[in-house]
Length: 379
Image 1 (tube, rainbow, N blue to C red):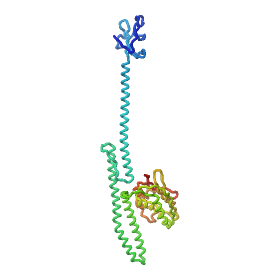
Image 2 (cartoon, rainbow, N blue to C red; image 1 turned 180 degrees about the horizontal axis):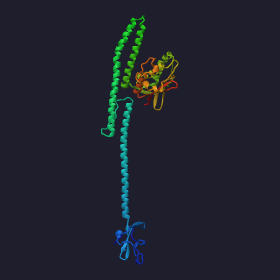
Image 3 (tube, helix red, strand yellow; image 1 turned 45 degrees about the horizontal axis):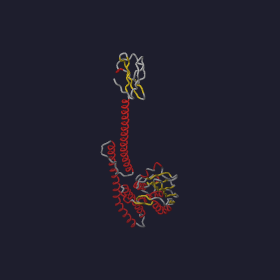
Image 4 (cartoon, rainbow, N blue to C red; image 1 turned 30 degrees about the vertical axis):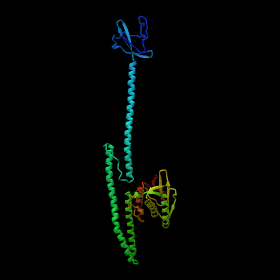
């Protein structure tokens, strides 16, 4: 039998006598007399020699004990290759799994961002906005499809309501105009008689009804988004100055004081100047109409890092917190305001104009009084 260990065996001379070494570099080891004489049943203990690693097998050969050292270098190298390959494979699989997970997460994030963007558009009144579909039949597509169907039905119902309101207002204006003309003629004929005042009161009521229908038609037009075609750069400071000049005398005649406190350096926004002017005018008219004599009304404006704000504030009775959302409803009037002229459409039109410009209308307590803030996002 020939053994080629690594490193090479060191030759040793001499006889094997009473356990002394005749040759080889295996240190003397004690051999149990109980061991069997076949190598296959040897214990295979590990033994380190000269910076090398061996597995030691020993067994009886006649009256002698033969010890054989088998180098583990090849096995260790194979183990190193296998373990290294396993480590690299684990690393590659982990990287692939992480990359695939990141790609799937990014894909889901894009889908969710698209859904969020569509819902944000819908919340701003763009009822024609829909969630994009990929057409791959996954769960997100299924949910998006059902949401789009619900939005289609909602859009159809809202459009029908707008159309009905517009049609009613439009169809009733013609007979009302004719009635107003007839009353005007009758009032002229009855001039100097007792019924002239009654005819004049009736004419004023018809004028008020016509104004209500005009407001309904304008709100329907605004909510339909038709006025966006007229958007352009608008100087907020200029609008506030014009309103203060126009309504200053009106407020004074009504026993209120109107003051302009807005700076002239407010930035421009993109919008419809006519509608924005009417929006601010409605806020000032509401304050004049519903506040008692001696009320102080302020028109102000300010900028924040994210917004441009128009502020109309008074020190009148204000609006209770539980009523602040209700006053934006169409034709809604608070109980205490039913004795004053008005149609209940002023703040509804204010919100419609604000939403057309993607702005928010905020009502808060001025302690005392009411503070109305119209908040436009800066571009």
